Length: 255
Image (cartoon, rainbow, N blue to C red; front, top):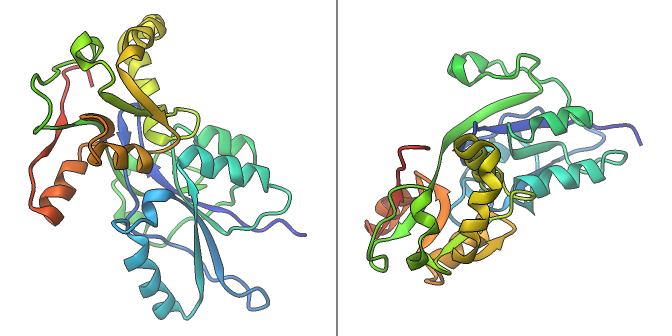
């Protein structure tokens, strides 16, 4: 089977950056193989994600059927694409961040795609001059806490290692999750060669480490732990759709 083209719609991310997609830009396939298959991260297709609103509008506008398949978190999306490298099943990837970009390029699974709307994207976000990826959103990683449960608010990464937060923190796996990998790089940026020592100190306070953000945040809002690694935009969601300021982001001086 001939290699089908991959277009990576990428979340802009740095050591402390991440985000959720808002739209997709893609090209119709040949008539003999109608329809588009998209691999996406879980929250993209969740009830609060954009897929349910964006995809039907695209289908109506372009007259083409789109199938969106939830694969997991960013790392899982990339791993599946690599496994299917010799027999690709999807046309578009949504949700891989730039911490995973080098691996994607090394595996040679992407085709060049330069959108006619590329000029609408701020120049500082265009980090791939070869246009294997198209930025569509960005944001910041942050710990989010439940203000109705937590008595003392941590003010630094070091504070998170205090005994009072025993079993009160939920993280995501850096091997499979975009925010999980982002947090790992965050600790490397802050602690340098001592980052593993920090993780050893933090370990007793971790209730669990999930495969992806979706399950982690679900456990958090379900009351299983009062602190979760998420995004600065997470509290805004609760304000907008639930009219609640219960969940708040922690902003540390070092990230």
